[in-house]
Amino acid sequence: MKASVVVFPGSNCDRDIAVALEKFQIKNEMVWHNETNLPKSDLVVLPGGFSYGDYLRTGCIASKSKILNEVIKHGKNGGLILGVCNGFQILIESGLLPGALLRNTKLKFLSKNVFLKVLNTNNNFCSNYKNKNIINLPIAHNEGNFFADTELLKKLEDNNLIAFKYCDENGKIESNSNPNGSLNNIAGILNDKKNILGMMPHPERVIDPYLSGEDGSIMFTSLLKSH
Amino acid sequence: MKFSVTVTLKKEVLDPQGTVVEKTLKNMGYSNIENIRQGKYFEIEINESNKENAKKIIEEICNKLLTNMVIEDYSINFN
Image (cartoon, rainbow over all chains, first blue to last red):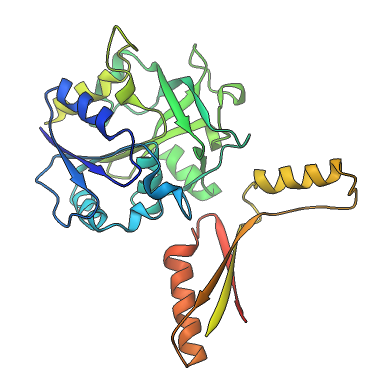
């Protein structure tokens, strides 16, 4: 399996993603945002960070960068795209995923571990979560408050396009376990074809049993299995 | 030709920053303040002599970049 990690000015989780991909034997190439050619890839990753200093709106300027035209083509052709944190914001601004990400309701940058329930394991990113559907991953964001109009929210729920929801340690999804005010506790969503996943939590930071745990590893083993 | 554009969150979108400003003003004693919405303001100069053409371009810019139409509305002012 081959992956490309897109690097924008201000990306800061690009190296972490690269380390995670390499650990799970996924060949990876870093691609600068000004490139007009995407290397042949099965997976494109838009990493976390503060691309273009979060100017205008988070992810907005990155969504207009040159490489994004190629990323959009890759996604439209069914190629896998993973957007983590700022990457999720870029996916939304580019129109590859629907909705919007607003500022956290309490207006604070949140950096902590949260529990998540995996709601859709029928996709290339999450298939191995079948055996473990309550996981613990870190979040680190200021704009992770997912917003959608009633129609879109219903569509996401009805078509099972919500990959992750914030929950408590027992898997209970309620407002107390919602860190940022996201509608219906949404932490990550899939597109209709389920080849594009955007999520606020960071799986790439939880791939080492000695340092953090392996709840994030499961995503990378799922991806590896898919190709 | 000069234009200005104001971008604000749609009415149905919660604006926590506006709410905090409103609460702070109330704490400062401005008890009759209600409903503050925070937005963004752009001043744009455009090299175009036809006002209608210019307005069309500004509208396009608003839709393509300045505004996220899912959550925001814009209004254009001719200065």
